[in-house]
Amino acid sequence: MTMNTEDTAEITCTVNGERVTRTVRVRQHLVDFLRGELQLTGSHLGCEHGICGACSVRVGGVVVRGCLMLAVQADGAEIVTIEGLTDSEEVADLQENFVARNALQCGFCTPGMLMTAAELLASGRPASREQIREFLSGNFCRCTGYHAIVDAVEATLRQRLEG
Image (tube, rainbow, N blue to C red; front, side):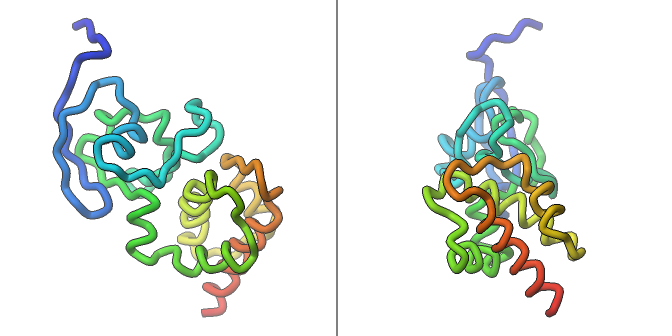
């Protein structure tokens, strides 16, 4: 079967706890679906090559690049965007530490950074500054120089471990 960019398919997935069914173009990227069809604009389009991390979302409990995944691949999946992560308050302490440590400036990379950092924090294990940097290395920030971001993640991790 030959497909063209106009071919469509119906998908059903759960996005931030809400079940949605939509007809999508088979070549539509997941982040475009989330932004355009569901108006969940927290995930950003940056490089569109999976390098910058601005489009990061959680699919099936794992952080993925929304610009590299097609919406049809998410059929049946549970998806959490930065909006869902914020609404659940899973990262409220991390967001407070980002603000307190000036770990964001333009904010473009922030949703992807928070999404990725949440994955590290969920492990519940201690991490050195170098390990935090390594974990976040797939997310680019053009404004902060990363020191404040690492500070915010480190502070949140320390607070959570101390209980």
